[in-house]
Length: 446
Ligand code: 5AD
Ligand code: SF4
Image 1 (tube, rainbow, N blue to C red):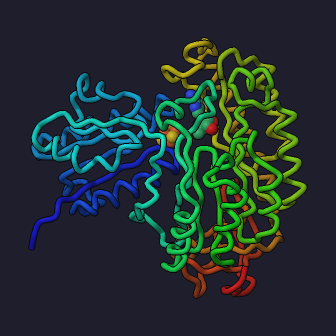
Image 2 (image 1 turned 135 degrees about the horizontal axis):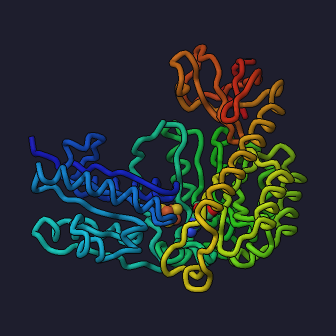
């Protein structure tokens, strides 16, 4: 039997990166590579990287050192950096660090086979060209690490919002939307294979526009119509583009999940202006009111940055008060990390001391834990339809899934299996999880 080379891919960063890894897996499979989860048998190691904060990059550098130790034992091994760090650091990774053989930016994955040939013959293999139109629309992602129930579908690429702190417009280039038919076909194909949930992905899905007349509300409706048993989620939304139109479409389609991730970043107008977010606190709260009006049971989550340039104690307090006012179910919370070449790096000093950033972040995390617990407690006694994803983390006697609001729900397994919809009455909770009991099997309807 012919020996097939093996590729091991490790992924860091956002869901978009996980989705890209599946595209890379597919391109490599077409060129006779099998993916492996066992690094020891790999002929090729790729790390799909994130540049959003300095610590994300440091983690990858540490991993590259370990990969190079493997290389000492296996001289033919090829190490590649793909994704956002490849785009940001370019030749630097090959020249200064000498730890990498192949460097490929997020829009150049089709070029991988040629680049690998170059690397195998000992030449410099780098392509970090960004594209105005690449969407990988025709590539059928290899569903690596999949639970067979939920899948990511990338609907657009790039970002042109230029939030002052953010590296993404530089690493992922211009915004472009994928053809709607290819998206709907991918969703239909997944449903036919047994998947029951798709997440439509983009840096800012609400600015999706492909053909005239098809914006995000129209697209999500097309996907929701694939089958009422297919749940549809989306991420991420920029508040400035979250339209009433979308909220109306969500309200009309029960299989579009009642969950919106709406990154606020800060509760202070001064900070929002410096961050170039293009909305005010009041305007953001207006969007939250609209969500609550159209979708009274909608789950809400957000992203928050602590300690951006010039942030005062008063600004920080405004973030805390906004969090309480909205009552988020969940939040991703970060210390500001200055990224080279961004607008903020050029214009604004990273002048909040590290210990102050740390303390503010802790206060934000502490408050969010209280809010998450309060939100979960309110669910006790309610019944939710849960899509089963697999066993709970703690026990093979329990299953775990999510409700429409995106909360994790754990319950005794009975005869249920991944992909089933089960009605669960919530009886207790922690900060992170709802626990409940089965009320009846309602497989077949939403
Ligand atoms: N420092 C800290 N957090 C950042 N984010 C983006 N850029 C930075 C940065 N330079 C956060 C934002 C964004 C999330 C994906 O990462 O909150 O919404
Ligand atoms: Fe990280 Fe942003 Fe790139 Fe995603 S798009 S991998 S969050 S830098």
